[in-house]
Length: 332
Image (cartoon, rainbow, N blue to C red; front, side, top):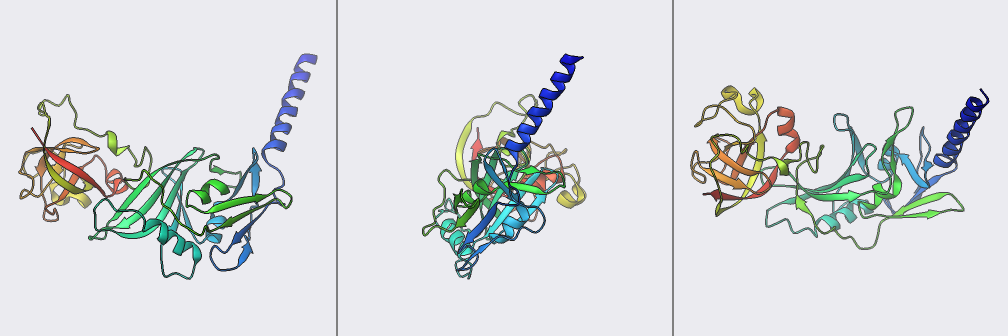
């Protein structure tokens, strides 16, 4: 009995020590924005939940912080992801939006005719791996993101009342902003650097979601090698860079055709693609960089010459995978 009491007491002491270490000085921590949304400095008004520190890392309510930094934040419930968006506008009266325009304009665009739009950061709940995206619009009005992974020191969390808390340093620095800390005043301060620069190693990726860059890690999707209709293939002649979209057998995506193709019967996610036969002959096999081998089994009035519509299993998958641009080769 004495042993049990000592064990319980020890556990209680450990819990109290953890709570004291993990969260403290909630009401004392302040955040100052130095010429971010205007030419003046101002302290962030945290309306309900105050900043807190966990393991010496400062976390702030996502919505209050985003609004103070001139950003928007949305919560994607299915993927448990907070998405922060910063508009890029070279003519804006906001320093941060002019800064974003300078950064995004330094990205080459991979030879595509694209208009810069915004920068977004996706912070998944309780994970240390975020994704930063520089978003462009192509000539047809579709969003084309170029991005990469960002390894965070801290993680986004939900506290008891359901408030989303994000690490201030990670969430601001991934946009290229400068974050400092004054220990005496317990104050974090955010500012816009004089020069903007875009990160290296960007690639055209899918829209926000699970996986590496999209909901099912689109880079790993290949035609089923156990399918008897898939021949032994090898890389052939380069065709060009194609716009890749995604569709499924539902009425919204495929109209009255449902789970049927124009030339090959059943629609097979992971194999069937819709093409323009003037560019890719019907029933021919192609290799799509990042996807693998696919077969031209379908077509449609909206398929341009350098456009491929990729068959996937569900409408949610088709929407979230969005638009990418990929190199395409004939298969031999």
